[in-house]
Image (cartoon, rainbow, N blue to C red; front, side, top):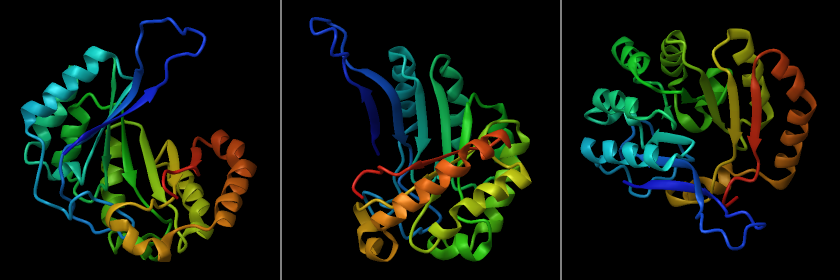
Length: 247
């Protein structure tokens, strides 16, 4: 289990300033387990049954709030597998200045967990979805799209903003923006973030079959540049993290 931070460097025009780096985002891996086996995922351990204790999570939340980080990302593994998931989300009320975000595959979001999410202080929920149809989604994530959609609909019903995160690889890159249009038609998300597989951890074994070519990066970015404003007018912000680490 670990926490990861992204830092903003000290401004170059203040060489004598005593102010240190400013933390923008803290990422907390609360559990080292997942109920899926996505081919591009890169766990540090091969899904060891480990989790951060609730008191440690609360301590992290308090520290993040005290230091004024802009965003706290709760992830894993799959956070809903944490044995004290309900209590963990209740602890998000410790955060006032910092915006807490949950990342989930949504396959375990039943009515009870949706209510826990609704009662939390989450600023948004990120859901993993890789295709507008079952076949496209399943190329690297398995046959679970219907469960994802059921969970995402329950999250959407809470009124919280939903961001869909898609890993774009060789088998779905040509249909990536079909999902953007599908999300608009079904009004299931506010944002659609696309990223590429990274060459790290266990995912290295599958990188040759999934990793994008340079031409794929340019082609997808050109498509997004062309339709970005139109999608935004229809209520969906789309972005491509084309400079994903280690690609």
